Length: 273
Image (cartoon, rainbow, N blue to C red; front, side, top):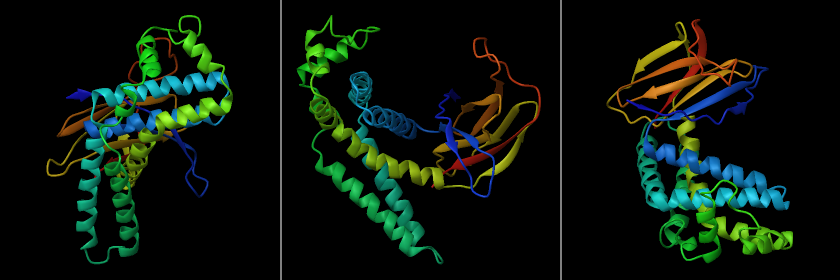
């Protein structure tokens, strides 16, 4: 069984005065894990670009280099197109069912087709536009060293860093554009995944919960909701046929966390189209 823990700690506010919840997500296959990482990086990039002071542009540049590294190791474009095609087929089958919301399905299918078309129009693999970029490849090598992307080791970086803000923004937005095209497609993929399935209230006895997965279906993600003020968090271990969740005490983050020994109520959604 593979063990992987990923948490955005997304803050969600449910209508009708429900208490705020912390959402923990656990991808169940490599493609959804890849998409979640890309989404996380693009969100960070956009955050820094909202206030493009030199320090935030530096942080956005580091995120861009992370996107570049990720796309250098994995064929993000092909993975995204494959999942878009798979979701398109799944929704086409859903549209044939009696009572399905044809208008809503058509809207989603049109979005999928539009995202796939834009990706097809982009030539080559994602990140290929940066492979021959001397400045960014120099920074990519320096980024492996803690504090390595600086102006005293790299005068060319100091030159770029002190350019007018409009020039820095134009550079960063131009470099990240292909990744945002992929993100637009990934965004709808993850939205459909997150909306699939139903949330079910569960209880982890003595802080531990275990369940099986139906082998006839391909599951994409687990979503666990806890009260926003809970002083514990879930660690998930998942395989193709089963998964387990243990809830860990977070009182003392500087010490090694321990499983709590009390019953935990939580909401669980097993996402699958």
